[in-house]
Amino acid sequence: MKTTIDLSSPKLLNSLIFLTDEPDEHLYISIANEILAYGTAALPFLKEKIKSISNVFHEERLNNLIYSIEQQSVREKLQLWSEKRENDLMEPYFILSRNRFPEEDWAWIGFQMVMLIEQAEKELNPDLTPLEQVKILNHIIYDVNKFRADMNTINVSDYYYINTLFETHLGNPLSLGMLYCIVAERLNIPIYGIDLPNHFILAFCKKTERHPRLEDVLFYINPFNKGNVLTRKDIRNYLYELRINPELKYFEPTRNISIIKKLLKTVKNVETILKNEE
Image 1 (cartoon, one colour):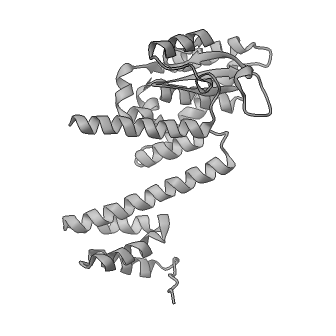
Image 2: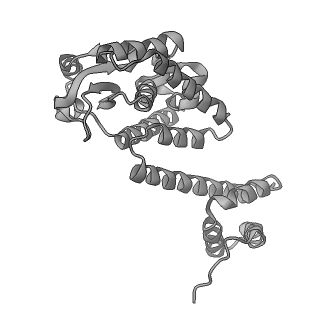
Image 3: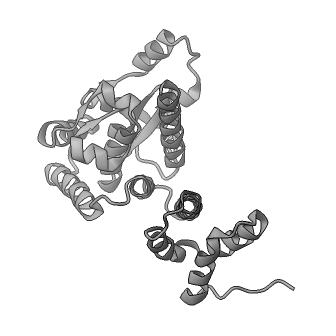
């Protein structure tokens, strides 16, 4: 009969953590699985225990447990987001950035985001045309707040996270594009991401009850060039230079979940390249 673990018992949890130096690997796996069942509740206890560990092997086990719990927590949060709040791009961007940089002052970063959105909101009004709205967003993001493109950020994984963007005001197509999307979302402006190979641009679309399609796109925006307006011909020329067939997916607005997948994939690729260069 399978024993039920009392997940509310810190005393039992501490006892399990005490046993993580168990030399028998099979026995340790059973202990580790019981600790993992506590989820994020186990993190403070594991982090406290690791302070008193001098054995490298034992320390590695504790670090692996901490990492596994944190990653599982991120996966659960992203799953809940994709099921309930997929139209909110800011939530998963903050989840992933916070996981990468847990010690950052996230209250300050959240405040900076709110201030940016409020600055744009004060300048907008319902009578503006789509191009006029973009002109205001560009002014607030690039002129007032001094966010700017930097080629060097493309090959450094830290620059793909929102906190680094706010701290340095330097970004790549994806980080600047996600920032632009988030501001637009919060202001109910129909701007969506376009997932291009080795690039990320935006589309200003007609407002529609469903997710916009190609016929709803009014024009495109390049967040890596101060919000410069693009046409379909510009995208075709870009793809032609890369010798890539101009498929529909390169012109049609993508969903937020695809943007998050692109972020994860891009960061992984950048880190793999850097690791291979070491």
